[in-house]
Length: 93
Image (cartoon, rainbow, N blue to C red):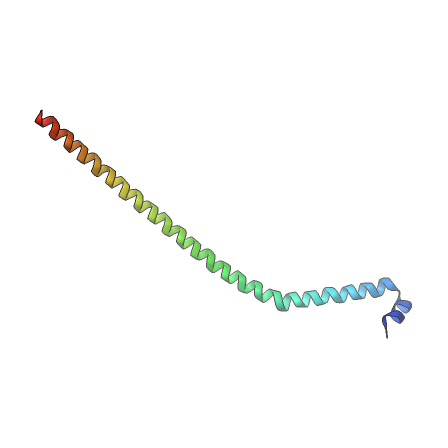
């Protein structure tokens, strides 16, 4: 049967609804067979990347804390050296 006889027998709205139903079925099958596996794989990769970013963030936090400690110790060393210089200068006078 061709489309013309189907339209004359059942009417355009019925044939259009059947055509749209087939289109929806085709898109559903395509999405579940083609797109869903790709999305699952991308989700796995995304989770791995998020974990790596968290690890790098933790490393940066630890590095920042170490730098703060080094700068603090350096500042204390400079203050101690200054106070020793001032004490030796005051002893000389």
